[in-house]
Length: 202
Image 1 (cartoon, rainbow, N blue to C red):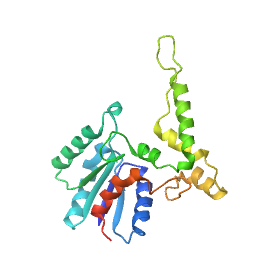
Image 2 (image 1 turned 30 degrees about the vertical axis):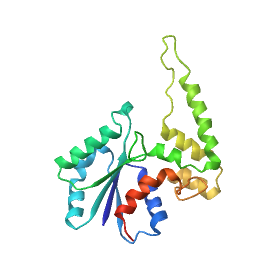
Image 3 (image 1 turned 30 degrees about the horizontal axis):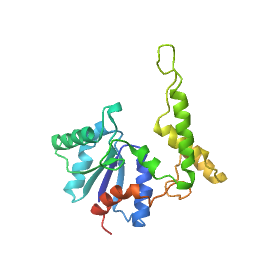
Image 4 (image 1 turned 90 degrees about the horizontal axis):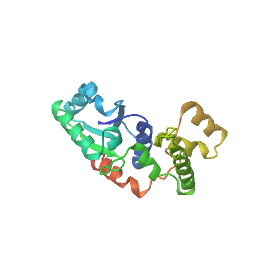
């Protein structure tokens, strides 16, 4: 069994991406939400049980950036130290591409359907406008929206069928397997694809 530990929403994406790559699960992998990079110790037993049964553990987390106390090198070092402390065996991949600072949402920005990239540019204009409003002391008057808001706005702006609209509003579905929204063959996904192919053999 391949156990894939992720932080949150990326579980829906990974499930769809794995099905895109391999066709069907056949009980080969299981995706577990860790709830954040600092919570590995809470999943200690799930890692160890899987290793004892001959399984493989994968960790796919955000690299983050210096702004939130992370960054590729910082986050990778932290996680490797924690794995060693806890005597956990796992392969590690950090979003967006396992070499740069960033997160899951940054990866998503690179795999939007090319037909709709204008929506991201529109949002960037909005971000600049919001950031440009400062008070008398030069401090920002407003909070600039984060990348999560940008991805949500991208999805919300694309016309949907009645069923899609229901799924988006009620189930918060991001349609990761729908080429109308995402390009799962984008070159930007190659590092993640290679990482998964190295472990999952069908």
